[in-house]
Amino acid sequence: MQIDDIRRLCVTGAGQMGAQIAVQAAMHGLEVALHDISEEQLERAVSENRKHLGRKVEKGSMTADELEATFARLTTTTDLEAACKGADFVIEAVVEKLEVKRKVFAELDRYTPDHAILATNSSYLGNSRIADATGRPKKVVNMHFFYPPLVMKLVEVVRGDSTSDETMDLTLALAERMGKVAVRVEKEMPGFLVNRILRALANEAYDLLENGVATFEDIDKACKLGLNHPMGPFMLGDFSGLDIGYNARLERYQETGDERFKPPEALELRVKRGDLGRKTGRGFYDYSTNPPTPTED
Ligand SMILES: NC(=O)c1ccc[n+]([C@@H]2O[C@H](COP(=O)([O-])OP(=O)(O)OC[C@H]3O[C@@H](n4cnc5c(N)ncnc54)[C@H](O)[C@@H]3O)[C@@H](O)[C@H]2O)c1
Image (cartoon, rainbow, N blue to C red):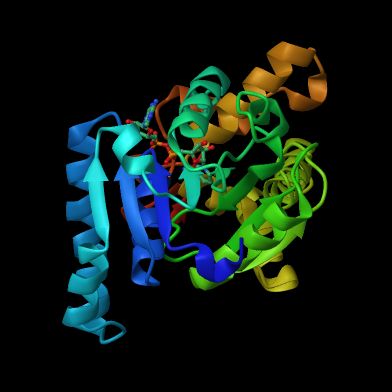
């Protein structure tokens, strides 16, 4: 298969990631069938993304005709078999549960043409844990977008134990065709590139805070001004949701008993009092003020 042979895409899972991945592909001329088990999710996917693209039209970065053409290329369905009909490439963005993904991949294998590549957008599950649920492990790969996919440029393409060179090359090419910049990750590692580096940075930042080396607002300031990061690790935690980082650490701590993964105190007390970051209006910072102000422990 060549990149120009990829014309029809199926995206399964129309949540935060899948809905925008589908729209991003349709914007770039691909025919897309968006699938979810929930009709309500599919309706929300279309209505919310019509609003996102509507703002692009208002700003002049897209025409009203281009918006209509995008949605004309996008169909939605709760019938996975119908979504897979004639698909050349599938991007799976269902919930982050291994057994659900394996079941979905077995179905994708049954319903798609033999040539179709099956990609998972999973952030943490390497495709080698999923590929053997299909009869085509060479055509299984991670295609990892970042939130929000309509905005974030990067895609990590990750090789699993069986992923072929052709699958890697076509997935990289598809990402570029969808207007993204793709990087090649040659080995499966938890967190791939970005989340792995981010975790190391956040761990160091918490270590400095817990050792009383600096306040969190000064650590954020140092990363912004010294590393040219758009925001420091504590504010970034607020943006992602403090509960997400907390739960990931707690799970790792409970699994390994390793003290290094124990959720830091400053994080735990905020999560326990319901200060989860931007989404609740308070986390490390209070977002009711402009600019946001640091909160007390
Ligand atoms: N949210 C992020 O920042 C982010 C970033 C990169 C990658 N990811 C990955 O993307 C995937 C989806 O994450 P999300 O944040 O969009 O989740 P989400 O909870 O917003 O959406 C998941 C969707 O999957 C649907 N679903 C559940 N079971 C299904 C099934 N059997 N078939 C079809 N649809 C099903 C749900 O109805 C829901 O709409 C995960 O694997 C996650 O690791 C998430």
